[in-house]
Image 1 (tube, rainbow, N blue to C red):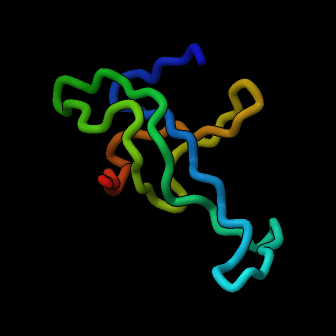
Image 2 (cartoon, helix red, strand yellow; image 1 turned 180 degrees about the vertical axis):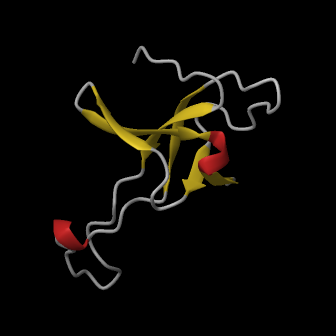
Amino acid sequence: MNIQPLADRVLIKPTPAEEKTLSGIIIPDSAKEKPLRGTVLAAGKGTKDEEMVVKENDVVMFGKYAGTEIELDGEKLLIMRQSDILAIIKD
C-alpha cells in the first residue's frame, strides 16, 4: 500500500462486521452494524499543536459515523482525524 495520511489523519482498516450472533443466527447484510473498531494502517506526522498518539498496528475504537470511507486496491478503508478516535484497545 502506497498512501501516507497528512497532518493528524489516520488510515484505518475496519474490523469486519459480525456474520452470526452468539446463538448462531446468521445476520443479513442489511442488518449488520457498521464496525466501530479497526487497525491503524498508517498515520500522519501530527500538527504543531497536536502530536500523534496512535501509530501503525494499533487497534482503535471510533465513532459510528467517523471518517470518510475510501476504496484502495479493492479494499474498503477509513481515513479520519486522530480526534475522531475514541480509544486505543490494548490486549
